[in-house]
Length: 318
Image (cartoon, rainbow, N blue to C red; front, side, top):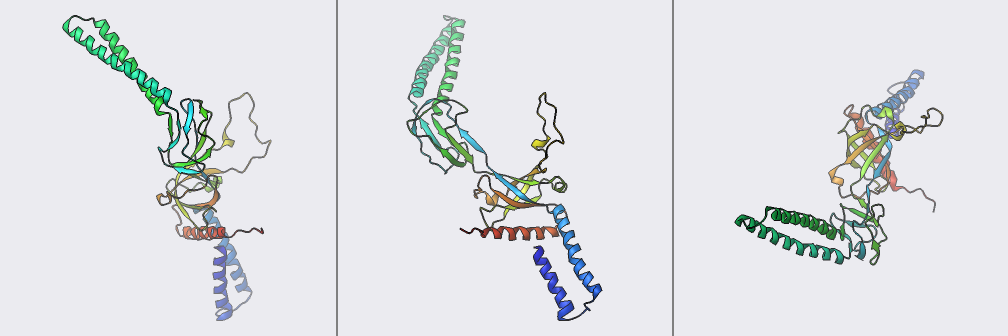
């Protein structure tokens, strides 16, 4: 964009001083002609960085969930494959439910008998021939069996493991015949959500004009030529460098190099891009458009669009 502006300016100078010779090309004219673009470009860049700040570190993050079994048993079916997209509730794998069905059926039979006993004791107490204690004992037994039935039914339902949300299964090593156990840190496959989290990293002095709700745009090289619309959801004013863990060690300051301070601005993509699957770990460029000096936003938008077009060029020699 800067080159385009300088090109237009050079064309105007050529027309005025050389083509039509409207003004003399003397020392004063030379100083003015060369001073205007230098001062103008410096002013333009400084204003852009304040009111339309850009970031060359726009990060795409997608939450991953380790899929674990909540019951133990032999795997009977794995209907998904690596990198398969699934919808919320789709079956990921099944466990042999025989022992869990048997436990549910056993308690269900006891539950029917317990209900019958409660009814009998209620009738006896009503007629004056029964004991209030026996009725209360029967009601307590019924309540206990009802809770057991809920727990066992829950275990039975867990023999079919389903996708927690819309996403992709990125690691499927599980096979029918494998034995799984209810061990929370032993994932049997990895699920990655479709909905990405977008973070743009800015230096500290670039944040003072950014506000929640500001318009933003970004691109990632995975989709050359595409500009993705977004809005500022929040500004995360914290980083690991500002945290001191509780310990008996004195804090260290000034004795080691400190990495450049960057703070994350979280973006939320426009609904029009809901079906676009951004690669987790992708890094791109973007900009936030503040509520001031809106005419500068056009220049920043043109710069972004030119940059994303350059992603079509792959400078490899092999």
